[in-house]
Length: 422
Image (cartoon, rainbow, N blue to C red; front, side):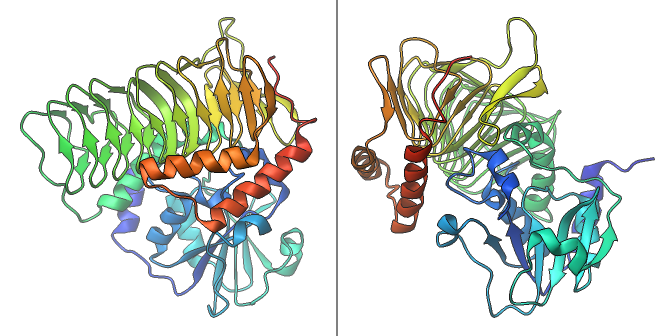
């Protein structure tokens, strides 16, 4: 009989292994472009799936530091491997932790590489210079992995695997801890509710019979909200009055959510603060939805959904009946924005349209009914400065340099990545 994955995780957590190696999340490879626009402004290892980001998962699992081996324009803003470390466990950042995968990593020896279906998953080394990934299988002793492992190959995999990852992260975060008490005005079904300190929540309905609900520190769940797990509400986030949050939803730290949300991951610091539907979606950091904005996640003809691929520069078949939208960091849409099934919005986009938003809008596009043009860089920076004064989220120099690099690439690619409706 196969042991349920949550029970396997619980058994693993009872015997935490503190590793003396540094975890390095690797994405300096062509496959990372499959995850654009979500990784335009961050390493793959910093994506959020479940409650935690990938680097947070690995750090907690092994009780050690995590770093990134990523693209040059990103590296200065994200922790690089420490040259003083004696050993490194280098993990491909697009693979998710699972009990079997984690166990195999603990058994890996120096100069061994873990291999799954002819692709490397991880290797352990004491070298200060990391080998070329293409030569790994020839340079290290191969160890075959025959267990279960899941890969974030495309953006939609984030919401597809989110439910399972919420459950696993819930075990990781709440292990040997007790939830804070909540007001008796709330109605709770089931036992898998965990509330951190200083949460404000009154007259809400929370159903954990289909999965856990995690509510982070200083979160606010306003009156009349309905939540059905698995759900994660991040630290400092707000769920506004009368919201309906369906299963498989992650609201990252510092976000505001309202209306109807289903099967969606929001990285954090983003706002959908009004009525409207958001479903089968992945939303980046520092995004904003105008009042009444809504997306569709199902085609009227019941065909499988296609999504724009930055790698293929064309639409690819997801083989899914339901797939809503993907939105990169720092993108904003005006009131009553309507997103049709399978829409991809790049990073740094400004939208204000009366009709349906095109199914692909490239990075740093300023798109209205009157114009479709490259966002003026200084206008973009000035807007973020004003936003920072209002929200307290200011751009630092490192983040500005990342955005400028994405902007320059968008300027070069604008003729190829043309906003188009198909």
